Image 1 (tube, rainbow, N blue to C red):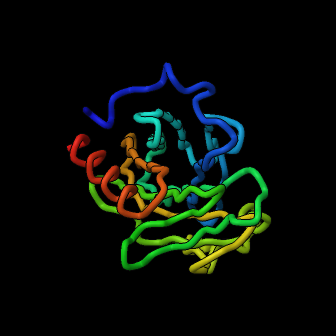
Image 2 (cartoon, rainbow, N blue to C red):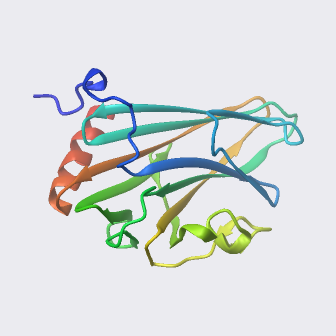
Length: 202
């Protein structure tokens, strides 16, 4: 059976509260913005448009694409941000980054969640885990001016993770960053599902 078979009809609502939630963001020229309650945002000063498309590819796989359009007349160095968090406050809520695996893992409600992302085949290289109350503050940054995240390897309840992917867009150029969340009961299951997802995406 094809594990990426669409199962949208079986899942309602698309992303229930009892799962990891995704909030995209963008850093550009020393400023950043989060798309908390919307799927599209126009940054008028930078002449950039952000659009987000989310899909449930499988009962255990949530896939999101963030599209960036540079409508200005100059090249833009941007960092696409991806925040993930478990919305229900429970005791066994943990987020940690694994430099060895180059992935982020969340543990919540007896489930393990794998978080990963890529742009043009290049995976995430900068990530952090921190308490949820810090994620909408400047405390996430090691250098806001450079757009570098403040690295923390682990966070406990309520825990969030953030990763950043760099993108250079020429005038009138579009870019896309993909991120996915996979739910499972153990690490081997997560990596196996991810391998099948990436193989199908080739």
